[in-house]
Length: 159
Image (cartoon, rainbow, N blue to C red; front, side, top):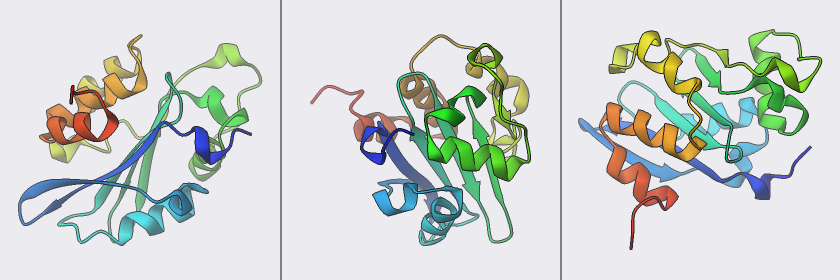
């Protein structure tokens, strides 16, 4: 398994007083989905918080917590052999691990952002996109209304 130091970025996004806030997630929250969900609960969010995590250039994880549940979307199920977060996500979803790398496919809840304006029909094509994980999540963040803050946090904007 790849260590935590190779996670490209890990950000929390949440609504507070009607505005999106973006903050880095602590490394201790990136151990597994349980720790990640607990880390998201610490943010004073109106209606839950999101985690946007770049596992590598090609894979990402989106986790959404609310008071009662944790929902997630993994961009590529074949990353279970490389990333503990991916492994625990697939376990939480109750899905079998893929037998080979040719089974690349998203796993999880395509509707986790629907109430925020990104339905499954909008999200699904992004998961089939050949762009890098940070570029895809930048588009997701822009659609949600915090694109500039996300881009600044992951270094997609020029200084």
